[in-house]
Image 1: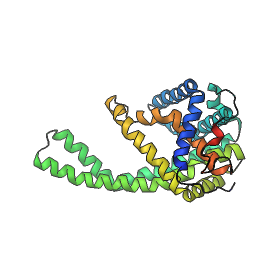
Image 2: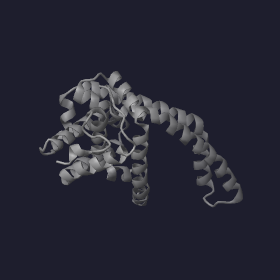
Image 3: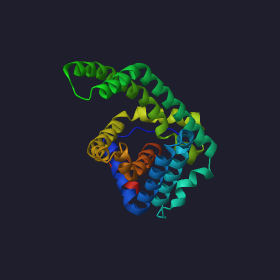
Image 4: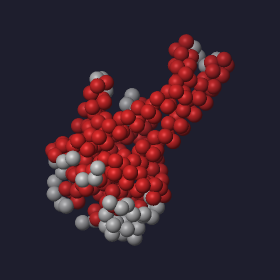
Length: 260
């Protein structure tokens, strides 16, 4: 499928589309996200299961996207949608999960290679000297520079991978596109629509700035992202509809496909 270019304002329209889909079945969206949240917390304690979870994430995402289409067609979202991705092109979706796994491992290796020593230095310094003396402060500042550099490099390297993965599960599930073609098309679609993606990202970042501190206070550093998931997940479907379903949601009409 050939992705089209949309106006920058559509980045906000995707968020609005996600909100509308959420409001069509808010309780079920919360239940589905809660199931995933609990499952991810459990598998975190077993490394091999964590790897399996990463591989299967595109399958679960495809099922949720099928749920979005179900809501769009006026039918009911169900818990069973979480497993709907296993019914179609499951092997191809797992392949996309494999690309995600390998890509993120490579990125982690790059970050550790750049800032691993600095991370270790900060941890040892804080463990030995909790009090910030001038010497400790100097050591921490030097380590912070390296950690910041590693984080910026990691973010820069992560962006192309995220762009390739953004639409790939939807293209494979809905249109039987091969994983390689789906990853390529998704990257091109994001690149062509860098402005609406930027607007979309700014909205997400603003929401995270509000929600992340709440999670930090509760000791759950990823809680902010999970709190956004009931809207964030359907907003991915809204962006897919806008870019890959020409004429459905133009800049003038916004996410009109959800205004039924």
